Length: 92
Image (tube, rainbow, N blue to C red):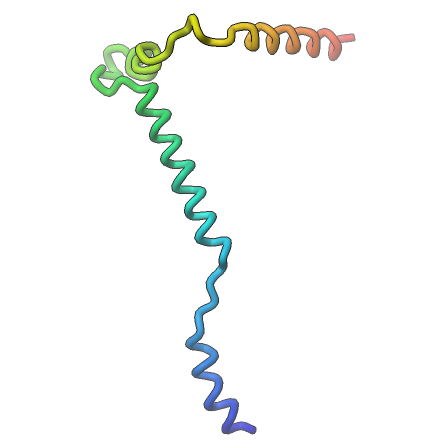
């Protein structure tokens, strides 16, 4: 019996069990990172010196790439109305 354990122990210890979720988690993290980088590149204007004009640096590309006339401003005003109603509800 001891002999069997001595023979099997190195074999069992050499097996590697991988977590199937580990790879998908790494893939999701990589996708999230890629989305973040895409968002930065869409928004940030790297041609502008942030010490000279930080607003243009941080938002310059977003301003150039976004057509504000096509934005759904109604959704923003709806959220604002809901926020005001919630605040009034909390005060009373």
